[in-house]
Length: 294
Image 1 (cartoon, rainbow, N blue to C red):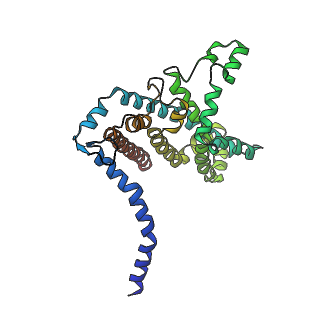
Image 2 (spheres, one colour):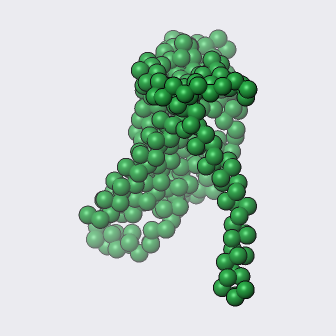
Image 3 (cartoon, rainbow, N blue to C red):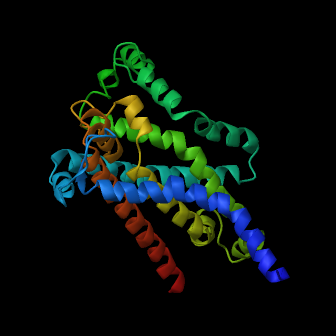
């Protein structure tokens, strides 16, 4: 065996465990989900899988509950781009500035990310409780009746309540993405801009934002894919209720599979989300790549 062949064999042997695990836990489940999406199956191993073609996809795409869950995902994406992105970028500007106390700020802003989603969700459930929650108590003290609203049980308000809690939780994580981009900008650019009279907000608009384009691309892809698969915070705060008004596609999929035992239909939902996530990620990547070429 030659040295080159020996190196190839050794490389393959080192890669083999990762490839096997990837095939078992990623590739096989994806193909199996795709296969199940064309069948009717109750989730029992011995029960037959009945081929029904595109019926599951038809049932999903004509379901009002599915489109309501997609609308809720649109609200999450809207909150992500209009609230979370500016907030995270401003926090990044703050912790990369020359102000005192930036170390404490970093720890404080990042702390919600270190908590489990369930803990954060339950904390906010108690805060928003209309009977004994702290928000309700503040409303009583100031005679602000709107603070005594049952936010998590009122259709429309329940979705936005979860959205705002989600932005509060992940602001610190996305702050790190933007701050990593900001600290990589050469200080000489800021000094040159200052000589040319570009100071203050102008530096942010003309230097910080354009040179953080890669961070904005990463944020956009993570935001879109994260919104499509959001499950835990909704399930912990509202369980998709009341009457499925705060459902996401993931909670809708969970109920179809594990509550109603429609595993074929839930697989169809999963395939639709997978295709949608890949397509939107490619579109975002193409958008930023196209802007780089101009």
